[in-house]
Each structure stands twice: as structure tokens, then as C-alpha cells.
Length: 120
Image (cartoon, rainbow, N blue to C red; front, top):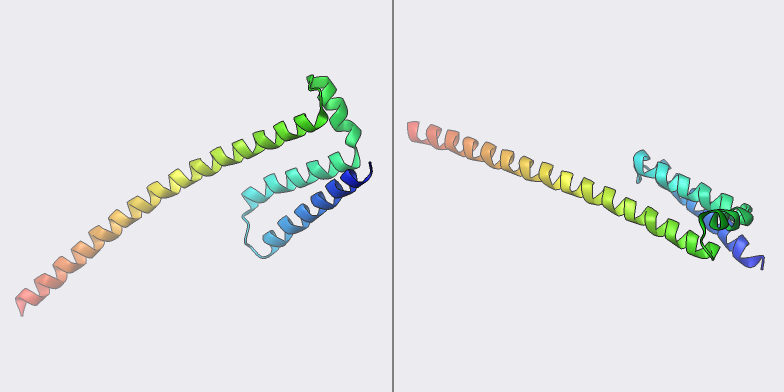
């Protein structure tokens, strides 16, 4: 019975260590790290106090605590997916605008070069 709690504790600690290492190496931005640290701390708290999940599931009316845990994880992943989709859309728009500006600058530069060549 103790193995799942130890596994949860190890998983939470590894997650937190991994997030902090990614932050230290500047591979993860702070705005994303906040969410991952919160998830790691939540996992750590649930592994240290598993009764809290049982009580919360009773309070919400969910029969099995694991179902509540999976629902919470699914909801968090859904929110992260929506946020990343929003950011990807915004970055695609910025990339398109920058590509158009570069194309216009190249055209202008080419026209200036052609004008200089005609004067010779």
C-alpha cells in the first residue's frame, strides 16, 4: 500500500527538480515554470497527504479519488492546450507579418539596386 505514495513522492520531486534544472539552463520560460512548479507541489502535497484527495473526492461527490485525480489532470492539460494554441496562433500571425515586411523590404532594396544599375 505504501509503494504508490512513495512513487508519487518520487515523481513529484523529480518533476520539481527537472523544472528547476530547465529554468537554470534557460530552456523553460518563467511563465510556464509557474504552472509546472504548482503541479509538482500539488503532486508532492497529495503524495504526503493522500487523505486530502480522499476527502476532496467525498466533498465533490466523486466515488473514487483516482477519478478526481485523473479529471483534474485532464482539465489542467486541456487548459494548457488552449493556452498553447492561443500562443501558437499569435506567433503565426506575427511570423506572417514579419515575412510580409521582409518581402516588402527586399522588393524595395531590389528596386533601388535596379535603379542604380539603370543610371550607369
